[in-house]
Length: 239
Image: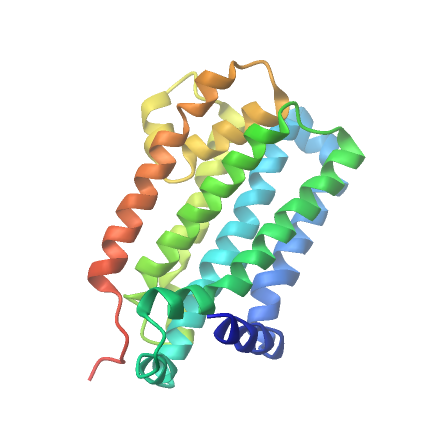
């Protein structure tokens, strides 16, 4: 698995499209929000900024790159060749996705640390960490599911749009308007409860037990995504 991960890490830094999608775009968007943090905090809150940063990295840095990577490796038959080795399916997928997952986690940690140093840190770091990890696991699962519907890296530019833009849109909706109205709808949408959890963790003022309940919808989406991935994921190109 580690040899696959090392090889994949090298490939990531050689691919310009992945570099733009995974690193430059999330960092640029995050830098804009942090630079204008007073403006966005006035219309939302610092917790809203943290949630948008998290989903920007999760949607573009992790989710889109996961789909693009798996579609590319399938197209050039690399996935098929890996299955002929002694490594199991779980080890193969773990090796392929470990680099981009670790990089996404590091990006979120660094960007949120910068936000905290500029505008003030979160109220509950442990709760924030739980929310971030649950969100990234959800985006990773959705990436595996979407990869089953994606024929090529070029096709990934289309298939990833609904989830990537949708989750960021939901995060903006919940982060700006709260959950006083349409609470059930907002929390059940992918990213809605995770956004509320991160907002609560950063801003404070909500009991930890009430915030932890918000993990349930996010974890439910993880189960749905993994179930879809197990049924739709393909190791070889369609003939």
